[in-house]
Image 1 (cartoon, rainbow, N blue to C red):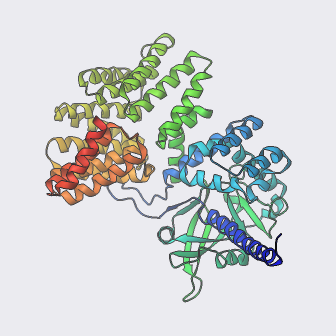
Image 2 (image 1 turned 90 degrees about the horizontal axis):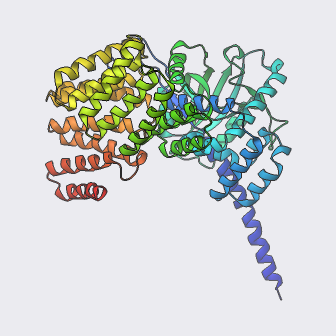
Amino acid sequence: MTSTKDHVDFLYKYHQIQPIHTQLTKATQSCDHDTIPMSFIPKREMSEAVSNEQNLDQLPPSYMYSMIFKDIVLEIDDDYAKSINALVIYCRQQKIPEIQINSLQSTYHQKSPVWWYSKSMFLHSMLNRALRLLDMEKMIKLGFFIRSLHLQLKQLHQEQSSNFQQAFTVYRGQELSQQDFQNLCNSKGGLLSFNNFLSTSKEKEVAIDFVNDSPHESTENVSVIFIMTIDQSKLSTSNTPFAMIDKHSAVPSEQEILFTMHIVFRAVEIKQMAENSRLWEAHLTITDENDPQLSTLTDRIKQEINDEGWHRMGKLMLKVGHFDQAEELYNELLKNASTDSDRANIYYMLGILKDQQGKYPEAAKFNKKSLEIDGKLLPEDDTSVASTYRNIGSVYKNMGEYSKALEYFKKTIKIQEKSLSPTDPALATSYNDIGLLYSIMSEYSKALEYGEKSHKINEKALPPIHPHLAISYNNIGEVYDNMGEYSKALEYFKKSNKIWEISLPSNHPDLAISYNNIGATYDNMGEYSKALEFYEKSNKTWEISLPSNHPNLVTSYNNIGAVYDNMGEYSKALEFYEKSLKIEE
């Protein structure tokens, strides 16, 4: 029989659990709120290594890639029932609580997207994490929800348009890490983008109360009140709708305005609210979407990812280095391909993917399958045939079969010089390929000739931070490196690296190559501590982005081992040599 004391003890413990659960829920919500993906772009003049033009307030590529993802998601008309079922299966794989999954599955259509977004459950945090980390699998699974939430905001904005005729101010309180706060301060006069849906309030006190009540308050964080001036005339509401959601939210609040994902502000002023206060104010204004420098880079990347629907998504995945997800997508597209032309295109993209993964025989197989189909469908001088020739040449180069690589690269050039404009970036890329190959073959005068041809075209045709400019700088640097002119090589490698760091995600394999080249040059100059610094940067990136048995990791571990060897740290050298050997076994 249960005693009265036992019963009282149970009730006491039960009532203790309740506030703990409340605190955990609040902490989770605060964490989601404070970790919204953001991009900081300081206003600064690009150095002469990049451009002689005026200030460029360009967004980082993570924003650009996410923006393209948004475009893709909004243009794809999926079957909502199938999409929800796919999300349910994924959530079970991710060990989401079954009660939440069942609630979503059984009642999704009974509530609005805004209600589900504001509901205290997994959807909000999953979306936030997906967009922050560019987790393509999560982003694809949530694509239907992103689209429906955007469309509801668009509809609500139209219904509420009379409320937004004049410029107005909204507020957002947020805890920033010391690093993000420093990035914010450095962005004064530059751009700040919120890459997820953005929750704000028309009441300043709501924003202040949020940071004052934050469970993350500590000396390691900085509390910031974003004060955002919204000028309707500077927004394309079809792309960036916003609306008051009080009547539609699962947690009604006063004067809440929700913006769609990817809204951009200019940072006007950052200041402390009062002396010795832990609160800072960041005054922001909506950017003009007609900003020519911003639109130039966006348009260029959109041109490069110029397919439709999920094919465009595949190219996006390759851009951000998500090779496994891209392969899964292309294999699924291959199963459902209805024409030979579609199959040729998918084989072509799988060839590129396998080449980037270092699986060269598979890459050659897919490229030749693509070429075989194109040979039946297209004229022999079609630029699509030239592109496949180039890919086959690249694979042979990576396999060390340089004479075959040169044969295919020259086939590429022969078609392109007839079919393309003399300033076409594709022609510059092909000149670069041949220049690099001649460098490997120790024919340095020819290597410089083709490298300079490539660079001249790129300077005329491309924005100053375009990745292809980085490639041509890099290849010229490699020629000088092979000639033993290390100071010149280092100059060009650093020019290349500055562009890569701006134009690629931090875990992209091409950025690792850039770090490796700088490390190798310092190594050749006998500056071993600097060499080690860049080799380790390269290795860290490759370990994240490549399969554990990739040939580049063999090179990377060997390079680090050799530096430690030269520095007399033999135990560390042995450690990295053994890592390299283990992959080769």
